[in-house]
Image (cartoon, rainbow, N blue to C red; front, side):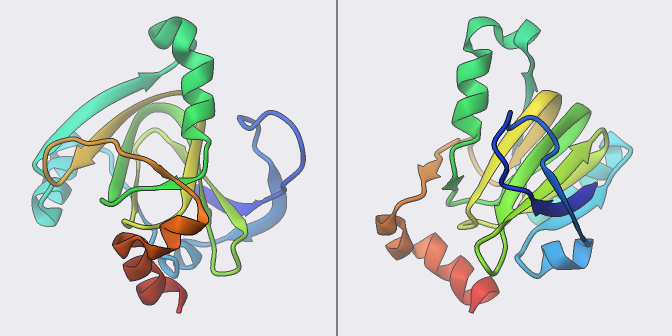
Length: 169
């Protein structure tokens, strides 16, 4: 895992966009983002049990596996949004970037590679981009993938309000 401030320069979203300002795992924790390096499926299973995750699926994000919809999906993942559930991703192969907002509303880019696991709290604004990634998604209940794109109305969302109260106030 490597975290840093996003440079906000124009260009392909799948490029590093490294501003040269590194951030630590502690910086991520301050906005509710948890990171672990997990090298075995048994350890992923242990974490799933500890956190109450009952379901999972796998997704391979690549032009070969997704065909004609790949470019549209990558653009969709990159739209700033939040979820009303924790977002848990375990990278089984490849690499990708999660961008999250910090306390000053700046983008923080988090590079994840094989065996990296990230947990984003419900209500955090984020986006994702990748070159090619094989990832496992873990869910507390039935898998759902409802992304709520950022808007002024979303400030009234109960999960967003809880996130702001816990991590940004």
